[in-house]
Length: 92
Image (cartoon, rainbow, N blue to C red; front, side, top):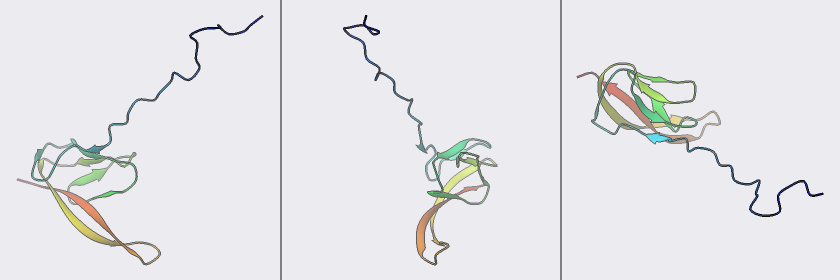
């Protein structure tokens, strides 16, 4: 006897939910304390003044203010340099 249905059955119908990563607040936007600025995997964006890093690399505001982005050159462990965006929150 067959152990599965003969028509219309598949075992490949599962898919995971999207992670909704990316920038949530842009340059010069007002933000409250504790609000998420960027959801990311890894350190593509670096935390600046008044910005904290969550356990999943999410950047969030430590205080209320205005979001500011700037480019910084960072030296890697092997001596090479990379350009990275730094996110800060400036108090009004």
